[in-house]
Length: 436
Ligand code: ATP
Ligand code: MG
Image (cartoon, rainbow, N blue to C red; front, side, top):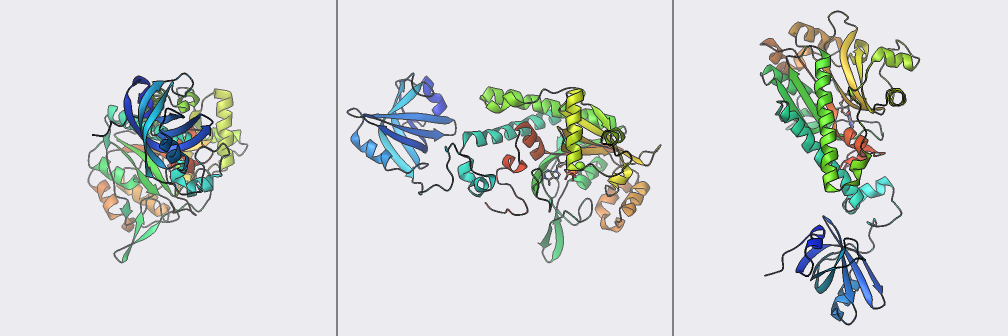
C-alpha cells in the first residue's frame, strides 16, 4: 500500500507523519551539507530538505539529475520548520521521477523576467503552471459559479442553444462559415434568436453561458474570435429600465460573490476588486455625445471615446460600472430585433453596460410585434425569408421581452485587471492563433 498522497497545503497539519507528495520539480539547490527541492502541486509548493549524513545519498543524485519541471513523487516525513515557506518541510526517504521534462524549457515557470504574451501563449501549458496565471482561472471559475447562482436565485432557467446555424443573428460580416455536409452553415455569433424563441415558448426567464464565435478581423486587446457569452432574456418586460435593474443586480451579486470566494481561497486578486457604486449611473447616449463634443453625430462610440466616457464617469461619479442608455436607432440599424420607441422611433431604448471605458454588455427591449419585426428586418437590408424558424415564434403569440449579451471574457479582463483579454482565456483564439 503506497502512502496516501497529500497536498502541499495540508502538510502543516501533519507534523511527524510519513506522507507522499507529488508535483513539478520547481527548483533544486545544493548548499554544502543540505539541499532543497521545491515541489509544486495544485495547492502550492513544498520544500523537500535533504541533509548530508541523514538523507540517503542516492536521493541527492536522483534530484540533482532531474530537469526542472519534471514530475516527481516524494515520500518523506513532515517536520515543522520556522524557516520554510509554509512552516513545514519534508524529510524524504524515497524519490520517484514520474515524468522527465525536456531541457531547455521553452518558457520558464518561476523566472523573474516575464516573457511576452505571444511566447507565453505559444507554451500555454507551462505558462498556466504559474500560480499568478492560475489565479486568473480561479477567478473565472468563481465568477461563473456566482453568476449561475445569481440567475437561479432570480428564477432564470439555464438553456443551451445551437451553435451551428443556418444563418447568423445580424448578417454576415463576423460569421465563420463551415461546410455542413455539402451546404453552408455558420458558427453562432450570439444565441440571440434562439433565446427569443424560447420566450415565445413560454420560458419567461432564461440564461445561457456558452461559446460564440466572431470573425473579428481587428487585432485588439479586447477582441477574441471565440468568446464566452452570458445571455439573459426576460419575458413580459416593456421598460428597458426593468431589464437594466435585473442585469445590475446580477452583476453586483456575482462580483461580490466572486470577491468573497476568492478571499476564502486566499487569492490576492480579491483585494484588487473595484468598489461598486449603486445604482450604476445611467448616462443617456445624447449626454455622452455632448461630453465628447460631438452632439448628434449618430454613430457608435470609438474605443477612445468609450475610454473617455469611462474616465469621466469614474472621475465625476466615482463609479466603475455604468450604463449608456437610449441608443439611437441609426446606430442600431442592423440590430433588427431591437425595439424602437413608440413615442420616438429614432430611439431604441438599447443600452450598453460599461466598466471603466470597456464595453461589457449590450441589451435592451426587443421588438415582439411580427409586422414591426418584418419592417426592421427589411430595414436592415435582410430578407425575412432567411429566418423562417425565428419568425414562426412571433406568429403564434410572443410576449414582450428584452435582455442582454454580456462578454464573460471582458468581465474577467476587468476584474483581474488584464491588459489583454487573451490572458483570461485558457487557450485563446484570434485571427492569428489556432494553436495550442
Ligand atoms: P464591440 O463593439 O466591443 O466589438 P459588440 O457591440 O460588437 O462589441 P455585442 O454584439 O454587443 O458586441 O456583444 C455583447 C458583448 O459581448 C459585448 O458587450 C462584449 O462584452 C462581448 N464581445 C463581443 N464581441 C467580442 C469579441 N470579439 N471578443 C470578446 N468579447 C466580445
Ligand atoms: Mg455591443
